[in-house]
Image (cartoon, rainbow, N blue to C red; front, top):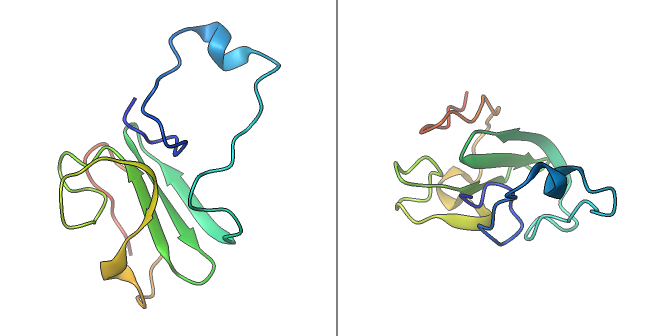
Length: 102
C-alpha cells in the first residue's frame, strides 16, 4: 500500500477475506480525531480531506509531490498542508499523480 488509507501503515490487504471479514471494524484516521470534515477524496495512491474550517490534510503516496507538502515523502496518516492554510478552497478530486483544487 501507499498509506492512502490513513491508518498509519502501508500494509495492504492481501486477500478478499481481509476486506470482507465481518469482524473487522472501521478505524479512526490518525490525525483527524475530532476534526469536522467537509470533504474527503481518495485517489488510487493518495487521499485528501478538507476540514470545515478549511484546513487541508493529505496522505499516501507523494512520488510526484501530489500531497502539496513541498517534498516527495510518503505520508502514512493525514498531515496538514501548511501552504494551503487560510485559503478558500474546494476540493476537486484525487488523481493518480495530482491533486486539483479550485
